[in-house]
Image 1 (spheres, rainbow, N blue to C red):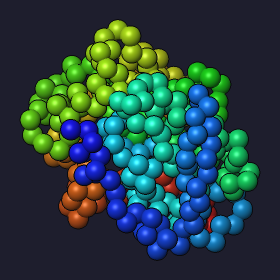
Image 2: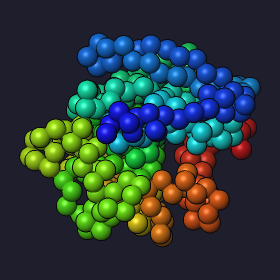
Image 3: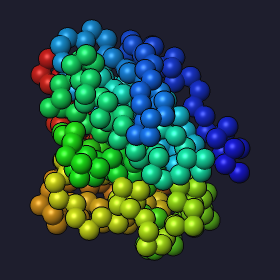
Image 4: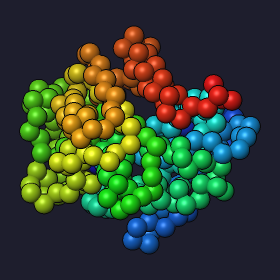
Length: 293
């Protein structure tokens, strides 16, 4: 099943959209945490003038599919409007590369970006990590790694319908079952690919499944959004609540009637436009600069 899903979900034409936006792209090979070669694409805005914000992008795909181009079209307005530079990473996929490889690959891309901020044209004080679905879970995990390993410092994390909890125990996981799109069965497939027999058991780290973290202190300002009709709803709400309980800053949106990926599948719907507008407004507050506003 996984090979067929990988073929079906491979994004087409994204590189052309990048070029049409006037964004320059170049590929770089970096070292993963275990010394493996990782490919990242560096996306530079048109007319870049001095250091701008940096965005590290972790793509979605259930932990077992997708490429570094998945989800990139969402980034393009931020690059153009705010002069941001994005680094999108081809992290290795489960089940061939199980936990902790995917989150360590994302963390390696984050540390590489921070270490090369000057040459990339990035202001290290405005470095944000971002991801959707599985990529949102990996971004959250990499943010926890950055906190616990002493860096690199992050200015913000943007988590779009993030995949955070392997335990399959919330109300929303039971409600969203057998309905298509990404439901309980899909979620089990993704977590099993990543964790194997450890899924749902006691030996899963907070970096693989950030919902397991009991301490969410010391995190950067966080944006979380999710649909009310998707499997991730309850874990996303709980994650934002955990950040608030620890004294952190979080903005949470639960979009009524939204199923997983609603904003990209039906972009003209009113709820989709509202979700994108809220996301864009938060990004503008976090990384915007006057000369690009």
